[in-house]
Image 1 (cartoon, rainbow, N blue to C red):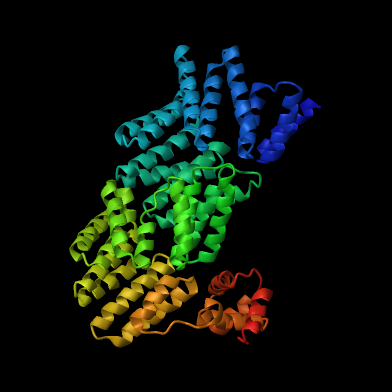
Image 2: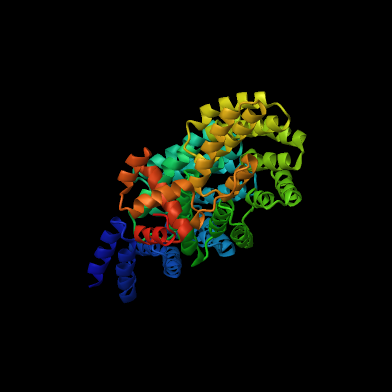
Length: 543
């Protein structure tokens, strides 16, 4: 019976059926000790299906038995991966102890093996967090070399992504980004084991988002989604995948979908608590802020703060939206002055410009624009270039140079046309409308404001819509359920039994746009079906 369970566990592991692999190998282990190779499989399968205690127990036993048998490489390997899994749960003291044990086993026995490369990974990460970037780079390069020498594909791919991130931290984007891509190619070719594959996926996507390389982030997030969805039992990387998916959805204007995905991520990350929970809570706060739900946003920012997640620039922008300009200035200034590295400053600078303009400090805003433009050039990011030019145009508008602002906005369109980010485009249209108005071109101004209003209504960007209405003197909508006129138009067609395709044809818009409107309608009405939305339409005399 035990032999059948071992074979079944091995087969399930090969098929990435982690729960079955764990159950069968654990049942065999309960009868008699597994061979060491299978005990390592049990440890991995347990970790991948969320059985952390069982995983730790299996790694520990494998380490101890390896020491007794004088298998120093295996002893170090088991100690290393136990340290990795503990570190993923923020149990850093225990993790450090196991990393130290792995190092001692190899040093005491003067043993040369690929596991020394994995310990260079630990050193590279530690030096990275300590901002000793040059020394960290050496550790990653050592790890790659050891991986080559021992033909360890897992080690080489992991070390390449680590090296790529450290090069990016040093501003060497053109060197770092190809390292990330090469690591991902190995993962996509199924050359990398499941645990390091998950680590590489999440790390590479985070790096792409750091440098605002949206195209890369979208591509690798789609790949991560496919990888996770193909493994229904997978637990450790699912929450992080949901955060990354939500970020891409939010950029694409699918705010209700992003909110739902973030909610699922929070559920996934809260039990057991994982370090990425703070990131998920911050994103939840950002969506609330953009939709004008300020109380909910403040509560979510506070929850993220309790998880030690950095709240800027979102919290400062919330204070600005609430009319607390002085508080916004104080918050963003602290963040700006505490941030020295280019990669992190590029995320703070756009908000810094916006808040300084709102406070009337045009000179400081102009200086920040220049720095933002320099960073955008260095990172070669179309998104950041577009944001930098929009910020520069906003400064010119406030300084009274509307003509110069329009020239900047015209150039900015060449960057925005490469991206599908409706919220940012709508904000650019508002500024373009203001500049056109100042130049006496009322027709163009009205066209820009109308386009921006349509985008804000479709997104559910209540704060921006209110500001635009105040700017143009438009009375606020009194339609039921806070629906926009376009949403009411679509809802009436739904109530008449029209499909998304029929609605798209009638209104001369894409099915994707109809689907986005439907998501917003469901979110505003707090319903989950077309039948419930139709009932609302009849109850409120929209038909």
